Length: 312
Image (cartoon, rainbow, N blue to C red; front, side, top):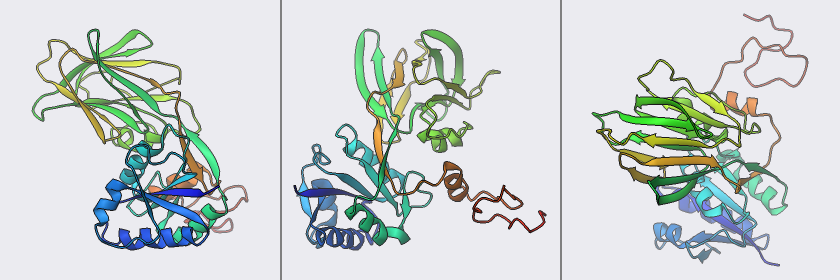
C-alpha cells in the first residue's frame, strides 16, 4: 500500500519552498509519497519541490496517513480545515513565533520526518465545536471551530448587545466588544487574551469569555462538554456584528441573529511525539519564570534552580 503524507505550508515564508522540498525528498527516499494542494503549489509557481504529488483542494487529506504542517498556528488551523473529518492526524512543525499548536520546532525537522517514516508517534484527539447561525426559523450557516467561536462588534464605534444562554436558560445580557466561546485547546489563544482561564487540553469543557463587557457580572464561565450555549444579538440593537471561527471563517450577523454552539461529535486528531506534560509546554511557550522551584527530586525543568541551590 502506497503511503502518502500531505504537506501544508506557510504561504508567505521566503524559505518555505526549500524547506518543503527538503521534507519531500526525505519522505520520498523512504517510499512515502509527499502531496501538496493545488492552491499551495500555485504559490510556489515554477520553483521545484522535487517528488511532490499535487492533489485537488477538495478533501486533499483523504487517504493520507498524516498531514505535516510547516508553519505557525495560522497554518495549523488551515491544516485542521483540510484534515478534520477524514481521520487524518496533524503534526505541526513550528516555523512561526509562539506556535502553541505545533508539536516540534524547526530545529527538530529532520528527526521529526524520520519519526514520521517510522510511524513513531501517538494520536491524541482534541474537542471541536459545532456552530449554527440562524435568524428566526432560517438557518444561515453551519460551521465548526477548533480554538474558538468569536462573536464581535462590526463597527469600532459601537458595542454589540447580546444575550447569552446556557442549556436553554438566559444567563446575562451584555453590551460588549464581543463574546468568545472556546475549547480547552483554544484557551491559550484569543480567549486567553480576553482574560479567560488556561484549561488543560485533557479537560472536557467549554469556555464562555465576555470581551470588554459593560456589566457587573462579566467573568469567564466554564461549563461541561454536554452544555449547549447560545448567543443572541439583541433584535433592536443599533449595531450589527460578525462571527469568526478560528479567525479564518466569518459570518455577518444582523440584529436578531442567534448563534448556537455545542461540542462537535467530530474531533481533530493530533499526532504527538512527546509525552511531556502540558505544564512544560505552557512554561516554554509563554516564557514563564520557574526560578526558585525545588520540586520533589524529579527531572528538573529548564530555568529551574537545582535542588541544592537556595531559592532567591
